[in-house]
Image (cartoon, rainbow over all chains, first blue to last red; front, side, top):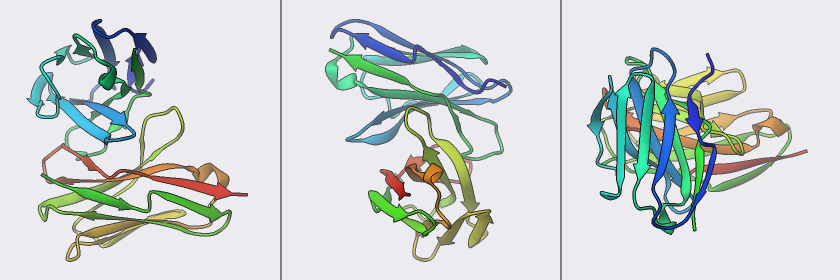
Length: 114
Length: 112
C-alpha cells in the first residue's frame, strides 16, 4: 500500500485565493481526519469522517474552511478565501475502526498564503 | 475537552543515553495513549501506544508507562541512536472517541 497520499505537497497562493487540498486514504480505512500543524498551536484536529460522513467538524476554524468526502477513496479540504494566518502544514490521516487512535498520517501539504 | 501537556519541549542526549518524555492529561475518561514520532518533512508516525488496562508496555528500545491515578504517562527511549532524533508527540483519547488530543511535542536531539 502506498500509504495516505496528499496533494499538492506544497502550495503557495495569494490572500483571497481559493485553495483545495486533496487526500487519498489507505484503502479499507473507514476513518479520515484532517489536521493542521503550526508552531503556535501544534497539531489541531479540524474535522473527521467515518464512512464518508462528517462526524465532528468542531475544529474547523471558520466558515472559510470546508471539507468533503464524496467517496471512500477521496477527500478535499477547501479554504475560500485564504488568509495569511491559514499558512500551516495540513495533514490528512486515516484509520481503521477498532484500532482506536492508530492514525496513519500522510506526508502533509505545506500551505503558504502571501 | 481533553488537555494534554508535554515536557520537556526540547531534549538533547548523548548517543547511548536514555531519553524520557512526560505527559499529563486532564480527562479521566481518556483511556488510549499513543506516541507519535515526526521526522523532518514527514507526517507523524505511531511508534507505541498503551491502553488504560495496562501500566507499562515495551517494544525493543522504547517503553511507555501509564499512571491513571496521577493522569500521567511517559515515553522512555533507551540506548538512543542518531536516528531517534525527531519530534515526539504524546496524545490521549477516550474510548470510542477518535478525537486524539496531542501534546505540544518534544524535539529530541541525539548527539553523536
